[in-house]
Amino acid sequence: MLQIEHNNLLIQNTLTDRIFPSPDAPLKSLDRIVSDFDFTTYHISTLPDNRELILISVYLKCWSDLVNYGVEAYLGNKYSKYEGPLTTLPSKDIESNYNYSMVLDLSQLSSKDDEFKNQLIEDLSFLKRHCMAAPFEQAFSRYDELSETYASSNTYAEEIQSELKNEQVLTINYRGSDESIYIKPSFDRVTVIFSTIFKDETDKIFGKVFLQEFVDARKRSVQNAPQVLYSHKVPPLDIQRVVKNYDDDNKGYVTFVLFPRHLIKGDRRDNCISHIQFFRNYFHYHIKCSKAYMHSRMRFRVKEFLKVLNRAKPENIDDDGKAIENRKTASGRRFDSTRV
Image (cartoon, rainbow, N blue to C red; front, side):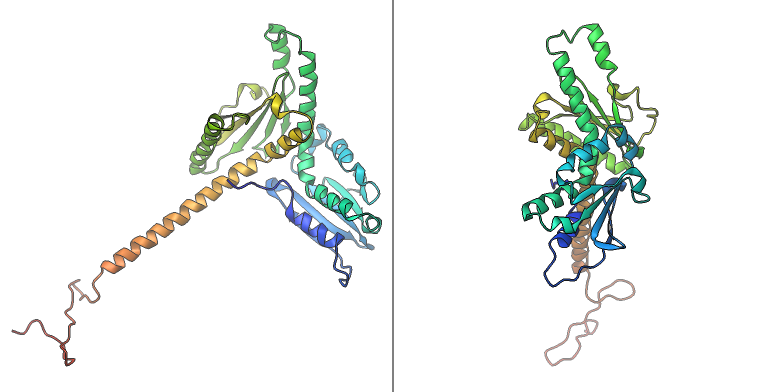
């Protein structure tokens, strides 16, 4: 299967062309809107009075949910090492119709080395990934607290089980109220549940096939992968108290169970966050690719059948569908099969 990149290639190319311009190229104004999956929109533009100042803004449909889970503090910490060339705008100065804005000063960036510039471009291209990572980081931090608290306790005791059952479920309505991400930490795992809508009946079939492949692959050779579960229409017990309406026949729930081996601090935890938050896009992207491939194969097969039928047709037929004798003699005269 193909992998979807976690960064935005258009943002990366736009900033690379601007930060590393050709020597003879004039400094032009910039105004580019980039649309990404799940209704995310970026706006990269130069300020009217200074072309060396680049305004970078982002809009996410679930921003209000992310604010509740500390996205602003997380982004501030993530981009603090670029302070100087990169400035985060206060809430009153954020670009209209966007949630978060930063200003990149090219004049201050010119004194930095190429490694610093390339790292800055890469981190800015991961802007959506960093925004969506905030609730996952909060859930994983809560997991660290719970695992330490209950390290020497009998977790099968009823009072501990009731406490864990009432643990907060972090909800991200990343595509509005129809599709959401639910994250529930515990002392020995973190459960991540995606609710997704299948608008077509064939999508449900393809979705079940893909999810079954996740399960089978884990059984065959990828034992370290998270456990994957799927339920149709009825949400899992972990989130039933936070799901308001689950009477939609087109909705499905995909559950990932992340174990301690997936939550080790450092690169492994960051890699886990990067992959799991884009699962919905990955999932539906491959459903559409599979449908497109099957349609192309069906069109190809129909063309082959038409070729066979065309070859089976006689060259000359009359109005009644009978073959017309059109043979000629060696001298060029037409042969009349009716003459005796």
